[in-house]
Each structure stands twice: as structure tokens, then as C-alpha cells.
Length: 598
Image 1 (cartoon, helix red, strand yellow):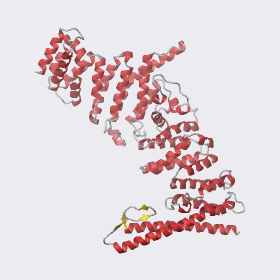
Image 2 (image 1 turned 180 degrees about the vertical axis):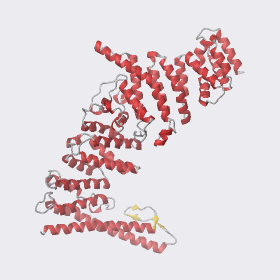
Image 3 (image 1 turned 135 degrees about the horizontal axis):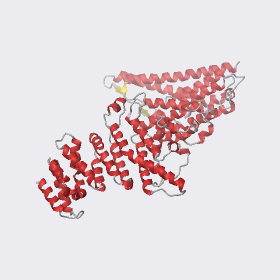
Image 4 (image 1 turned 30 degrees about the horizontal axis):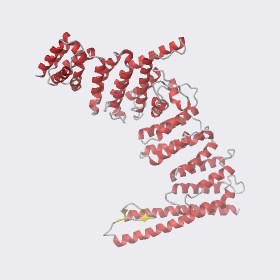
């Protein structure tokens, strides 16, 4: 029935002039033709399509047969595969490019990852041929094609392990390779256009660029920028030592080469935060043309994976590179996705290791990213759920501290004590302050920042309790213990007669603002926890059988439900902590009394 309908509509249309077919003719041809292919009459359809008398009909309406043809081609095992492939190839040669593009774009849309990969593998080459046939009018159609392809690519899972990339379990690697092959001739054309344009500019100063040529370059630039963001910012590339042949690393390299080929300077892109760029036609805003995430991804590929690093001139100093990368690092560390945080830490570490220890001056802390990056580092170290990233964040924080000169360290410590709002981080900063004081007190290492008049304001911040005697000693334990360690060190290390740090003239204030309130806080906390311990043990003895699980409040907060044994153990641990704080306090008081009496 469908074959008869197809034959009838074709025979009727043979007598009509080209492009004068009615809507009904189009509908009957489409429905009947598709049904024939679906019912397995592909050989008969091929005969009709190849008939010389029907070429005008095929040119106008043949593209409507693409959906069932592509379904057969995707299945591969269908007995009608050869006939369908022949029809498909003939349609690509005969139909008008505009209709073919619409038909191919529609067939790119899928949700199933397996179908996406097979569809891209099948359709990218035909799509490339159709686009190339458009000549100089291809730019906007290429842009739409690339956007559709990247949307499909974004639906594929990412390989996380070496084995997943080697085996290409999600087919992303093959799709990236296919995409590289797809875009290559357009990049070459844009490269030639750029070279020709430069020659014309040399010969005829001020001659405007050809619109079509510039549009092609613009679409390719947008494609590269999108690709840098997804998938390249989300996937973790493997180093050559880990994976000798990496399709994803090769894909990233090709994207960077494409940027260079279309006239984009990679150093200018990476160092954009510090270099003024010219306005690019085709974009209303620079952020649209050069998305910050894409530029951050580019910096990571260059500085961490060293892709196309040979194109970077050695004139840029490590400090200049660090300054520029701080914008990219800040952006990556401000995100919540683990892939972005990891790349931010990697980029920060690689940027820092090239800088000489103690060489970063204090004036750099007047540049916003040098203050916001540590804030984001604190969030990584304290909030990020992944232990490896928290540990690496601490390592990078220490590396950044090591790169500052003495004045910069001093200012940085003050800033961190003011803004970190986390006992563990504050404790770590205070430990670093103690180390710097120790260095300053070594013979021949004296400096004005970690001894004498400058040190005292910093010490006053270190030797203080956030809420006086009512400070939650368990919450601020890390900070308090490091503060006590600093005070004990100073009392032992600095002689009363020399008083290099000024601690002995400041001691009476420290006793009033830190030591006495701390002792009061210890006594209050111990009394509270001893009462809770007594109540818990009484409850355990009185209601052990009927109520084996207890809920105990400390302060205004209810502790989590736990067995009475666990609750008692937690309370004993708290009391032990108060004893530890008191023992250090007593030792400091003993040391000060002895030294003052010498």
C-alpha cells in the first residue's frame, strides 16, 4: 500500500515543474516513503530515488526520508542496510543543503548515551560535507551544528579512571576524536582567511575584514571556548606517564591549536586579566566572547598539563604568571564542583612552585584575588567533603605563605586571623606566626615584623579569647592550644633582659586579657561538664534497663543521641581537654614567675 502511494505521488510529480509540488504532495511522499523504509522496501525506494526522472523530486523532498534511514544505519545489523546507505549517500549528494542540515540536526537529538555516541559517529561526517558545500555562507550553520553537537556531548558520562579512558566505556573519547576531525577543515579555512587578511592589511592599511570570514572565525572561537568549559574543565586529564596515549589530552591539544590557528594568541588569552584585549566583532560583551571559566580551563591546561607551553614566551616572570592566574584560581576555588576545586588547587600550586620563596611583596596583598583566594581556600579546607582536597588545600596554603616576604607574611597573618572564622585555620596561622618569630630570633635573622613593636599588635590578636571567659573552649581548642604554645615559647625563648619580642613588657596585659579569662573559662567549663557527667552516670544507674539510649544537653545544644557509655566517654574527653589547657597555663605561670625573679 505505502509503496503504491509512493509510486503514485512520484509519477504525478514527474509532470510538475521543479518547486511547484503541493503540500499534499510533500506529505504523501514523506509518509509513504518513510513507511516503505520502515517496512523493509528499501530496495524499491532506492530504485525510485536513483531514477533520473525523479531527481528534481528527490532534490526538493528527499530529505524527509532521513529519519527512518538513519535509524536503520544506527542499528547496523538490518538486512536493508546496504540499500539504506545507498539512499542516504544519494540524498547527501542531491538534496539542497538547507533542508539536509535541518534533517541532520533533528537526528542528532538523543537522550540515551549509547545512541548519542553512535549518532555523532554516523552523522558528523555527512554534516561536515553538507556544511562545506555551503561555501562562504556556512558560518551561522556551522555555529548551530557545533552547538548541537556540544549539547549532545554534554549528556555523555565522563571517564574518571585511566581504565575508563583506555576502554572508552562511555564513548566520549571517540566522540571527541570525531569532533576534532569534523571541525578541522573549518579551522584550516579560518586559518587561511586570517593569513590572507593579514596580508591584505599589510598591503592596504585599514581595509576592513570580510564579513563571512570573520563570522567563521567567530563561530570557531565560540566553539573552542565552550569546549574548554565542557568537557575539558570537568574531565581530569591523565599525564603521559600515567596514560601514554590519551584521546582526551589529544582533544585538548587540538582545541588549543585551533585557537592559535584562527588567530588567537594563547598567552594573551591566559594573561587576559592583566592585559587589555581589543574588542572582538560579533560579541556585545567580552565575557560572552571569552567566558572566565573557559579562560581558567585554558590556564590549567597550559600551566598544569603544559599543553602548547612552547608557544609561551619566556619573558613573562613567574610572579607575573601567578598574578594573572590568581583570577583563574579564584574563580575555580569559588565553585562547589570537586573537578573545579581540584583544578583550582592544581593551578595555584603549579603557579606558586615557580616563584622563589620569600619573594612576594606585601603590596600584592592590595590586589583583590590575593585576599579572596585564601578565603576560598579556607572554605575548601573546612567545608569540602573530599578529604584529599581538604588536605591539598592546606598544603597549598602553606606553600603560598612560604612565597611571601616577611612584611607580606605579617600582613597576611593579620588578615587571616581577622577573616578565617575557623579555629583550626586560626590555629594553623598562629603556628606559622610562632615559626616566623623563631626564625627572627635566630642570630643574624632579626627583622622588624616579628619582633619588637610590630610584633606586639599581632600577639594581641593571637593571645585573645573570642568571647572572653564564656568562649566555647572545645570549639576554639585548636586556636587556644596554639596561642598557649606561642606564649610558652616566648616566655622560654626570650630573655627578660633582652626582651626582643616585647613579651615581658606586655605580659601584665596578656595576663589580664588572656590568661585570667582563660582560667575562668576552664573552671566554668569543667564545673559544667562535671555536673553533666554526674547526671549522666546517675541516669545510667537509675534507668539503664528501660532507657539505654540517652540525650544530654551541653549549654543550649543537645548532643546527638548515643549510648550512655559513649556519652560518658565524650564528657570525660572534654574534661581531659580542660585539664590539658590548665596544665599549659600553670606551666606558663611557673616559667614567668621564675624568669621575673632572676
